[in-house]
Length: 113
Length: 113
Image (cartoon, rainbow over all chains, first blue to last red; front, side, top):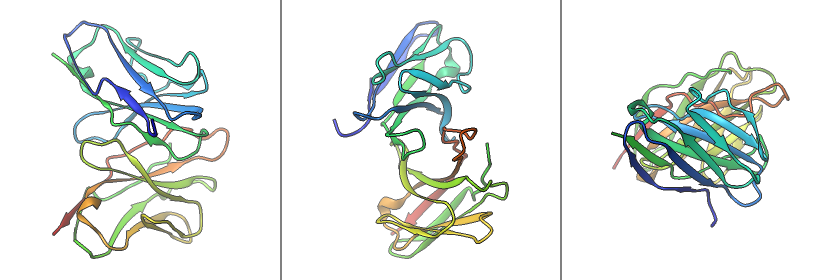
């Protein structure tokens, strides 16, 4: 596809469950970012990958959150033991190089009930 | 992370110019000024960026103060589709600078027909 693709677009899960959110970046983009956005707030940085490695994971709120990008393309954000406070829109972005224009996906709306 | 200050909201009339201000008094010499916007229910999209000189592209113009402590995003003729939250972001160039985009709350632009 032409843009950043995120699946699923919506996810409803029960408190305590495990969820995986997927991001397909633009082909050839080496940099990949995860953000989350609560209602009325700007996107909050979670983690940044350069290639396969996490270059900056300073935004991950706690050890329930983990992200991987094993082949330097698709990335998965994993959340264990979900809490109601994890409910938000999770955004993924990619860029051709680390300081280039970032292209964002439409996001995954996660609702923890 | 260098911080920016923007008004919470602004209003404009359709087909009139809009000037969106941003203050960044702590900007360092190698920080680029980036603007992104986020339409309702969408991920953010790149608008424009600059370092010292004014910049123009098909979407907007960026006017940067001589001391670089402030900048203005200019939409020459606002349309209803320009209604969005506009984010002004500083992005470091040096190796020690942040690779990530740090979003504030932005300016919510309302365009009246």
